[in-house]
Length: 189
Image (cartoon, rainbow, N blue to C red; front, side, top):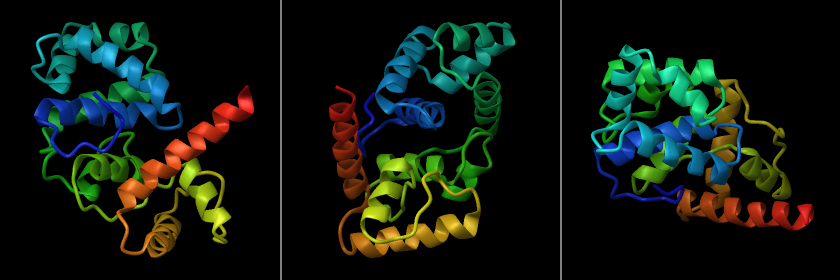
């Protein structure tokens, strides 16, 4: 699994990426990616689908233990998300932002992240701290944290897309993330 845009993911890879997208909210993508990968390898070694594998081990009373063992964090939210996602049986290849947002723990940013990094041609803004900083650098009054109000998110998304113009918002987002990530690493050394 990768945290880069990949538009050729199969159903099982989409499930794993959704788990990653939900688990990484508010955390380091690189660290969370490693944790989610080992979690998926442990819980779903045959590659049958992480959500059904989680559902099966949850019925055996072992899911909570596995989630803690892999230190995925936000344990209650994660458990609730996995249980709901498994039962909902959402088609991850065709679902919409609105449908994803019905899942516990999936908000506007996570839903847009999932769709933008799994499907080509998406016109969304993934308003994480990197994009919000980039917007401020471009003269947009943007908060430091992702807005929780839908109208504020939509307003900032429109401004981001206007700045991107005809460019690919997903690629712009990924390049901003990579450049900001480097800046953070340089500052900590």
